[in-house]
Image (cartoon, rainbow, N blue to C red; front, side):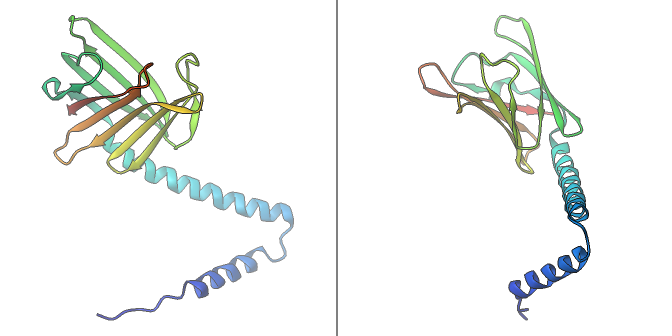
Length: 184
């Protein structure tokens, strides 16, 4: 096998020279506009790639109740988990039938860019963050007073199921995990 020698220092110097030549003769405002345009192009490329990866999670997922494992509360009798995309925002809608046969539902929107944003109910939490960890792992984190109080991990399994793990901290400071499995 033939090995090609790669000189990263030479590559860095060559790139630096090209940028210096492009910036030569530009005013400070023109240089700032050059860098801002580059940043905008990079951000658009990153968002496009992110949206392609997120598309695997989208749609309506149906609960497989017999596979649920809850450490707190009682698993639903049936349910749906819907993920809808609007640009970089995802809407999560959960509908379920509880152990008493009552229909329940909740929905919320999260921006999938890895940044923390204010939580809609400050009595419960301060902020939340949604991040695509890798192509099969979508993670939400919720903090209160700087401490992590809830994590929701959505994992696409190789058998086409969606595993949703909700891990939280009880008032007693005990950590719990509720795990549910879904299929399309």
